[in-house]
Length: 460
Image (cartoon, rainbow, N blue to C red):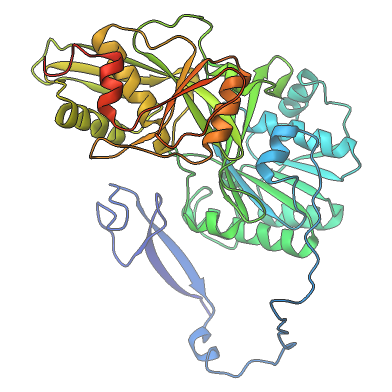
């Protein structure tokens, strides 16, 4: 008897299911992303739901205060990678790593697999995008070709699971999940249904076998991992690999981690022999000039438990057009608009008819509100043409009233600035005193910073 076939229209951007085709997805708003996907069910499937099923083993419950062993961690041996994982990778865990094409995902994971294999962990690397010869050539270039990593090039889910069950590895890399397909589904490889089903089967195998699984995911033009968001809920950790191709460093940022912190980053430098952990992360984001010119301010940031100093650059120039431009790189454009509104309303500055460009050096991205004061200092310095005081750092959140609010972990920011030889720090009024020759100047309200850097620009 033929199978009863049903179909639905699934959005390839967000995974939402629609009963009929439409030009625009109602869930995410994307256009022309609905694709018809067929699913088949055996005859009598609906009737079978009413039939009592066989009783299986009972589910046992345990108390919250019962003694349960903490999952053991396996150190990869790459310091920055172990930091992001939370102190090493956990067996039976599933991790999803996304990043732009060519950013170095495969290179980093091949290096990690080789390091684990040399440490006695049985490691498998499955690639659906490259031929075996290409991966072997990369391994020779990275000087890891002699590592006992088992390599396979396969995209059929059934064959991959069969090989994994036979090999019984401790660490598995699937590069990438969008290339894996299952013959149980009629959808095309890379579709939402295929990605969801294949990821679910692989994660289920990892939980049962005790192996640590790493899935590589493609990213969309918006920078998010392609496919349904349900894949991110299936896995235990989600990491994003960031960086600019024109720069030598890369950042591995955790956005979800069930076994560690979600605000840690790992910083790597790209060399001829692959990615190596950065020894001095702050030096990557600072200018080599000892005396920076106007429009530059240094921000004392915090990434997880690590303080990082980043350089904020601004350029304010007269606009030749009727509508001024606002260009932002590495900073939230909404926060920049808010800072400019506070400077105009509370401090008497005028940005009308001025193009404003704001950029964070080195491709670093500022995600915390404490970077407001450094952005404001760079804007004021460019507007007035006066450079900020030499060897100085800025941090603090700007309120709509013009007050400068406290930032978390101010003592660690000051210690890092003092260690790198900075002499002055400008921050909230509640900033602690610093040692190491660092002078702390409290900034209670934004008007005090205007009086310091651009006294002639106010009410001009």
